[in-house]
Image (cartoon, rainbow, N blue to C red; front, side, top):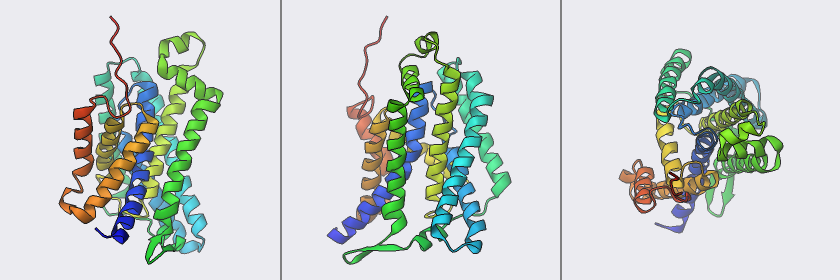
Length: 301
């Protein structure tokens, strides 16, 4: 592998890792705070992507501004995430909070199947893309290699800003500190007067917006087709399992590891590209069954 190809692989890997991290960050946040492995999380990715692509396709012939198209893409993801997250938390998750973990898992799986069918009813089976955003944002030349501004700057910067904002929210705001307290012990937090229903709604909506934003950022570089949510659900679970359940910063490192190694494999061993995330996950879990960044705790009897 030449140096130029390695640079291309690194840029592709970081851009891919940024999308993975946005989705995985929402998934691990919900598990950390609410103790729910949300199988429906991949559907939020798909809805965010379809909403963003539809919005960009509508605006592209009517505006020449690349900034407006990106802001519209971002806004579509946020709106889709807010609506889906609030509805699902209020109608489903809140009522299942005291269920057995396996029942919660099955409940979110059922929700995922329904959301997939609704998605097909709204957008059909034809592919959707928002490639106009990438074209209008232009390219950046570094040496003899040309990169798209979107993949080199926009996608990684958005993921990093989302991560920093989430960390600021959790550690610098009152509601965020209450969320962290709920993570440690929900019953004690309730006894101290913390409104855990409010915390649950806020957490789930934030996670849904993150998932939808991941789909929106993927829309300009991929074609969205039925099944996109399923693929991202499996990949994000691989990231979360590799990092350790509930580890947000760990998910960042695991996403980078999987994204970069996967991108390098495209040039070195393309037949392994699809399997790379799962190979990494299996190797990590063999050595550290609780994930890279989770410390096993002794069970109290």
